[in-house]
Length: 266
Image (cartoon, rainbow, N blue to C red; front, side, top):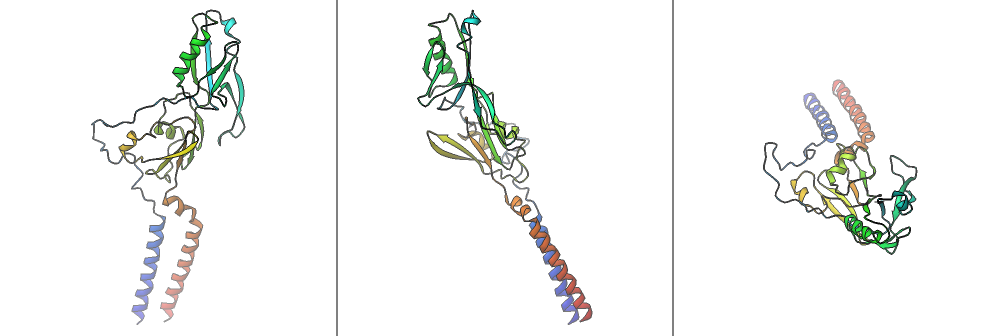
């Protein structure tokens, strides 16, 4: 009878420790990117998302620089507006952005030249239109246009969650995740959410970093004001319950001690 009790006590202890070890174990199955691509695979990926240039939207801010043979005469046209922008998690204070805001009618306003309708245009199309308008008052103008507030926000399980202002319009999900310091070990790589404003409605795309199908997704290239959210995986949830696991370990240890004492005095 005594041996049976000892055997039962030993079984309880082993099972308890096994549960604790399994509970605290981090599953690395979904950590590596592009798991369906062999490291020795030199073949090309045939299906890649087509890059579509972002278009100018209401409340965008454009950086416009016009150069002519007489720089003094064009200086007044280049005078931009300084606007206050919302700070980021890494820089919570309000930031200043200098540029030409797109009003509710989709127009920008240049001194001397007047209002120019740019809503729905790419920066290249806007550049050509502005060049045409400015040419009426200035000879052979050279015009540069880009977004002054091309911003992508990255939230969730990344090393540096923040809003990032980017000088380049052609930016992919991999570019932005690199800026954010990559996913933490707790990031769910197979279900990255991209939240996009599409004509006043919110559109949500899902990306799987474990598969090369990522490159064919219409959300592979990001657009201004996109929000990228990295969901925490199960291991993160488990880590948040570390206090509960510690309590459970202490309780199991106490029970195990009591069982051993009981078997000795049985």
